[in-house]
Length: 238
Image (cartoon, rainbow, N blue to C red; front, side, top):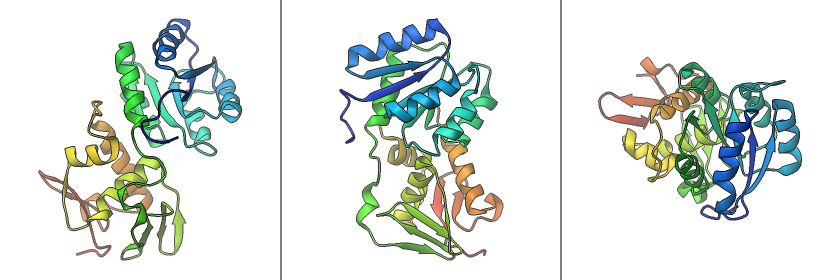
């Protein structure tokens, strides 16, 4: 689906609390979205395979399989955007949810307008390649990035990145000598109309560094410029 194309978008809601099911469905259907509901984690995975959603609204606390496990399994066969619903006091759940492939989270209770705005912002992001998609392969020491294929190799072995992890790496590696401020990186990856908690960027950066084997104190690839932002390293320890 092209970025910005919203009507007819398939949204799978995996939620067992009737109050929130009613709220989410009532918020999304007037926007022209096709909405399907599953009431437990396993039913949600089954529905994702047949319904093939563009977006999954996923509660953390579910019967049968919890939202963390659903997201983990979903990422093995679907690139749908995942908006995770979490309780106000469950910061650890939000971090874990982002670490297993969720794109964003929304804290309960929430306003219907915020739910719709978050989903529309995700849909406006370009999937399957960004500004650098037609550029040549990039190399930083043992790290190679193929912008056209959205593939990454480290020491000759391909590594699997989530969509956002790749987009962060793509943004930093596109102009490697430029340091991006936090707001510039958020705009580049999440879009300039995104208004959520910028804590999500720290989680995705941490996940990216872990997969690259990058120690943030002596970074080879994703470097922090203290007090300013982030840039690419050349792959060699100084």
